[in-house]
Length: 437
Image (cartoon, rainbow, N blue to C red; front, top):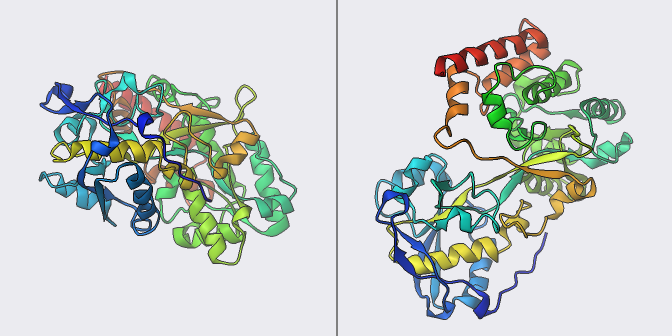
């Protein structure tokens, strides 16, 4: 999709100066004031994981940026293994001027590596995710470059052939839709069991049933896999899809790259993934003689108070190297990229700005009046409680092991049934909570 990138008037653009502060208990600086963009100059290096865009889209962005900041030179370093390579470079002072905060860096290390951008309270009315992501103790170190919505990617052509023209609103409707599509076209749901990581995408839907406080509610509960609760709802739907024979016949042979083509061409009806995947499936459609218009993104079938919901969360956060020698130019790029580049829209993501445009990939969400759920941050001092519990319980909510076992039980490859497995999960969760205290 195309988007015109407009350049704001000079007077409207925020620049910055640097002033000393004690953010994060460090000798770092923070940005505080506006100025004339034409007075900002220097060369900056921007680290990115988008090896596929560095010579095209990002290059075009620089042209637009330089129309406003003519004396700032922008170079890119694209890394295929961004996490691995950049995390190692953090041991030096040479990790570019602007970078994506590696996910391996825990929040308590933000002040060690990154320039504080300001106080979170000053940003909450403008940007999504800043309360719970990219910040520490009220200080902001990074802003999401785009946001991901939860839901599932669907081939609307095969859905329409089966008479399904709108997102199902309940698990029963969803199962009926998959059954109708399989009967009419042969297309099935796809678990991507063998690759494993796609199974974790189901957890990205936390919040669509229980709302913004879902994590705190789960952490205060000894039995989250009980009917009527969110974990039961999500995992029960996956179980029922497989147990009903509505998924791929042999999940042990799945392949992520092949699945994109199969979904694009209608051999697969749907896959639970984040909105980040939509453009990839659309690209696969165009590359394989199908239509990108057949690919859409629908909210999960858990109607609550008359509305379908989608949890939104930030992608990589963009920040500034605290050792940068060109912090003013680095901040100018950061602000322009988040506010003016149109990156989130172009990539089919949720805008990090509260007033940002909704991309075409999420058009179906607007049509059904889906509600965004932005999860509330954890209680100060208890930010790791959820991971402490699931690690102690050995239930990898964000991994693939326990959902692989769920799929195996559902397809009859392991002993047990839904009730016995959920009872086991509840017991391990309760024991872990008791052990942590």
